[in-house]
Each structure stands twice: as structure tokens, then as C-alpha cells.
Length: 155
Image (cartoon, rainbow, N blue to C red; front, side):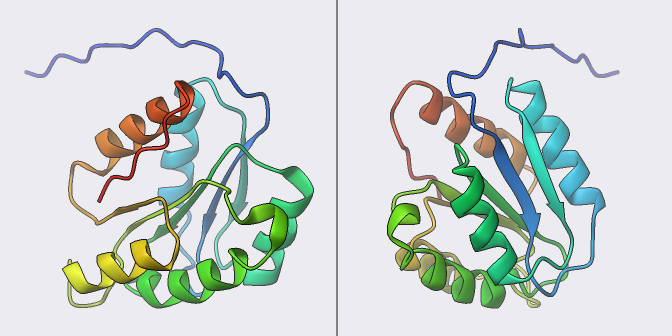
């Protein structure tokens, strides 16, 4: 028997939306729906861009919507490669240089690889979550850090 403790849902301190997206090569959508629901439980409005989002489309959406933060998710094992290309491009766009952005899921086809995690963090992701069971807990902690004005790096 498990007991679920509900947290009080408070309005997000920032009214801008959160963008949830997959990487360009990832066609999965169930992970995006899960993340959307998780982030909405924390009080944020979510714009879910869906699966197989081209880098240009994600960057344009970030420039247009100016989100509170961005969550990228990958299930197919190519998230590390796709994420590196995207973050390098995104960080060169002036107004997006300090946009909080995280990536998580199956980042490599060989399972969790500390080198991929380190490369993603060094390239500009504010947090990198592998596909272990603690991902949702770590994402909540990251968001709470944003809520109180402290950008915390979790890896």
C-alpha cells in the first residue's frame, strides 16, 4: 500500500508559461504529457510543443513566449546529441542567454553516461536529469529553487 501526499497547489510566482518539448528526433509524447501535468501541479501554465520539435521552432517559441523555464525530454536515447546541438544554438540568441533550461530522460543509447551529463551541463543546461526514478523529484526541487529566486544546478 502506498500513501500519496498531495502538496498544496500555489499559483506560480511568474505568470509566463513553461515550455515543455521533446528533442528533434524524439517522437514520444507520453513523457511530455506527464511533465506537463507535473509542472501544472506546481502552479505553472504549460505550452507543450510536442514531439519531434525542430530546433528553429523551439528557439522561435522561446523568443516569442519568453518562458519562465524550458523542459526538454527524451525517451529514444538521442537526447544527449540533440540537446547539445540545441543548447549551443539557443545560448547564442541574446535574449535567451540566461533562460533556465533543463533536459532529462534517456540521454544516450547506452544508458546513463556521466560524460554526456557533464557535456550537457558544460554546454549550458541549468540542470540535467538522467532517466532514473528521482527525475520528477529533482525537477520539483529545481522549480522550487526558481520560485524562491535561486537558480540551483542539479546534476
